[in-house]
Length: 260
Ligand code: CAA
Image 1 (tube, rainbow, N blue to C red):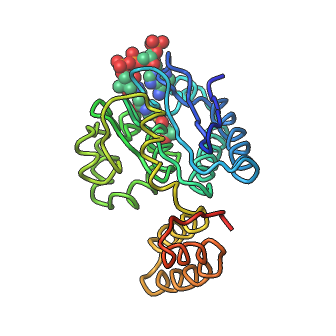
Image 2 (image 1 turned 120 degrees about the horizontal axis):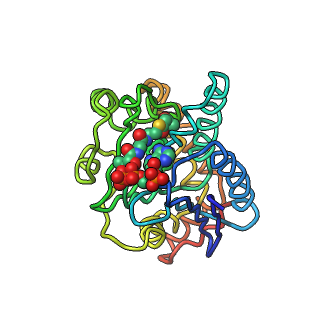
């Protein structure tokens, strides 16, 4: 299987396993990803999964983007359907209730970087190289890159990266906020779990509402964003976890959150 899912100790691990093609995303792989996401959504509710780590197989690549030979033979209708599916799958990742991290230990190009951009966080090792090189193929990004990249790093930097198609090295990616953190080389899954650990000790409802307040807020005016924050901070106040968190502080003990 080119898309592997494992669940262990409250974490889901989604592994792209097509190393001979640098984990390129064929249409079939996108469909497998979509089906796997349905399993992850179910596991969040039924198996108490609280984080998602996405990795790519092999030494060289997280994911080299859409499958180029496959793109070449597509009709316009097939291409439109491919873009719709790619956007749907990546929207589904960004809408997951749990935080996710893409571990970029090598190449993350085109659809591969767009996959990483749909995650809550991206971490990279020194060997990571990323970019949206579609322009060199006579194309433009189609799985969310023209929308998520400027929202993350600003319009000017996104214009530079998309219009040049150039490769961004790991240190620059960290400096401009394209990746959240640089990490030492190691097993990609272990790097991802270690990175997520400080977030996952908090309650899911608070994590979810904080993410919502930020992601909805950055897409609107400050005034409307403050209203979103007011409403969500009032909503979270009514949860059992909020009561537990504040009570634990007063009683000078660690909080035990139950996601209620
Ligand atoms: N699709 C299909 N196969 C790919 C691929 C891709 N995107 N990227 C690499 N491969 C294959 C190569 O064809 C090669 O296969 P063979 O051994 O059978 O020839 C194998 O993976 C290894 O690749 P290289 O020999 O090229 O490895 P390298 O280390 O010399 O170079 C690379 C690595 C710089 C990533 C180079 O492979 C490359 O430029 N790949 C294309 C990257 C790209 O343009 N991605 C964007 C795709 S379009 C897109 O994603 C649109 C969108 O918005 C969704």
